[in-house]
Length: 357
Image (tube, rainbow, N blue to C red; front, top):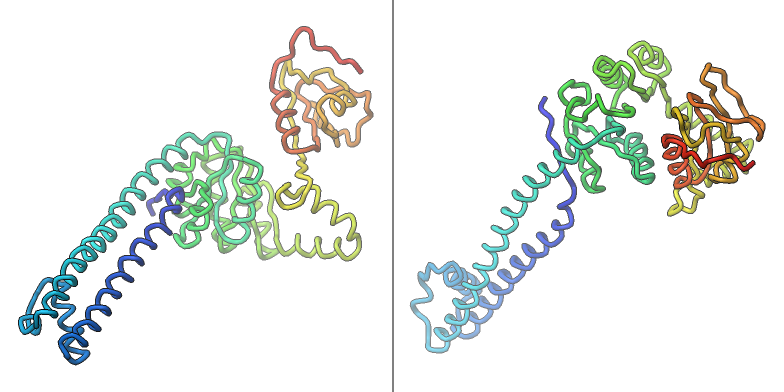
């Protein structure tokens, strides 16, 4: 199945197109109604004859009963002809403009989408635009994370188009579609398509193309989780298991769950917009040899744990401990500060940088 890229940037024209067509139709029906009433009272025709005569005039056919008009009827018919020609021209222009604009919008939209997808790097691939896939895409889009959605159902894909998210209409289990999404440059992949069997196929295909890519798969049934793991999924998530755990936490620890919900919800939804990120400390990084206390004071992040280069996980480390090249720092903070922190972790230290703590 060939993939078709789509783009939602031209949806803003949809309402304008509909308005033009609606206006043209209303004006034409109004003209036919006014013409029928006029001929009925001026010439004394029946309502059917009046309607028929009006349609003959508007369509420029001019057959009977227009050839039997009185003087006043001819004057009224001239008015109907002039207005009718203008309205018919407007209607034809509106329909033509809609068709041309739609075709051009679709063409340029596909070209723009192809270019946008071609530039993707270090992005996430979301397979499936159902309820789970949409939620994943919304969370990432709210945090300005680069992503592309793959959905084979055009109706489902329309959601991504309307939200102006990069989307490929195609089968996510197809190697060609995953290559079009540039899986070789992707940072991770989440598969949340309709069925567990499809998720297994997507996982198998993705793992074959990208052996080291982190893959998160959704599983509806418990017996499918082991199959997805064997297929190559890094993590398997069951929405039903998560929902059960969440309900239990709400019942037993409602204040804790409320804090978690507020902490990680976007600001526009009333949340604190916190983020937990694992930041790798590169060689000669600006973070190298800095104490954890300095990281909190200087960068506004809370260090939850440090995974040392040797592999051991140091949970809740002491403030005086330092980080070294090759360590991974698990930090929590506001989204903007976490992004700045991650960016600094990749920058080389300046000779004047010292740890004041």
